[in-house]
Image 1 (tube, rainbow, N blue to C red):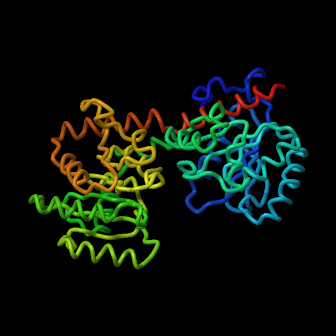
Image 2: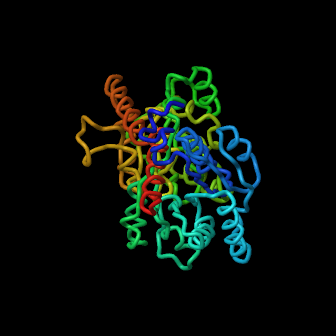
Image 3: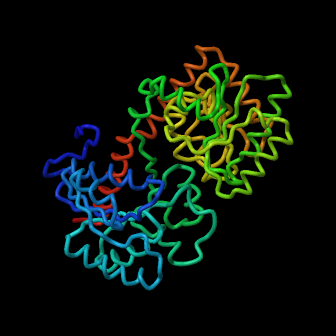
Length: 404
């Protein structure tokens, strides 16, 4: 990795992070989002001349941290037992002293509570991370409030930052936006083979002539699958044909899956709605689909997968919740000639159907122009290099604020 993208973070003696020891504490999660960010930041710290430590539960992360030049420290970061967490404060304090840590970055609520206690004892700067799209209600305990007590508080979107500012008004001046970092090169549509696309479409039961409207989200009531089915019915009533709606996600409850099947049957679109598991090859899925739809009714439903869809240049339709307006640029917030996708009111099947129809009816040149602008916007806001640079900037600012 070149040092240039991380400028001014180099290995020179006066570089802000050179010679510093930074510890990230993160619980292991099945989704892998925080792990990827943790590893990328650890690699960036090493490249900047810092010592990168990662404290987490024993697991595969240990070898990956070592592979990027960092040091993994086994630590029960996922433990939420109150007594164990109180003991972990002392345990972490001992680690910070013995490793001569200069700054701690806690990447979860539990980690923030433990790290806050340890850092206060040792008078070390602490960076905390707001989970997801921010809290929806006031914290009910010091455990929930700890994420707002860092010297600097990181949010993953402007929306999450504003939402968190309402809950933690005292932290407003300490809030910083560090958006998720995607490997944009890996998400380039040109790198997806025809065979991969064909395999994805075969899994949906979509013949070559059918256009696919893909809704890649777990089957939960808040992800808007009923709205997608209703939009399918409205488009069918208008005479649109050769369209397959693919609901691609695991069902949290089998009863919900049966409910969606029954609703599609009742609306007369059962034959054109395919309910399948989450795509194993998301880049191929986005290339194989004509439109990608995210119809969530809650902020948490518009996240990393929507960003990946836009990065792939998929014609993306998102409900206006959470960070939707950061991912997609669309009228009336943007001029029509700068459109990168479509934003619709949540729960509005007619608006969703109209947006899908608009995307499907585009000519080749207009379609390609939107895809190109979408890829460009995501590359600007969500690149891995930008995420690393922004996070290291927060570390440098926190260290500077504490003084030598």
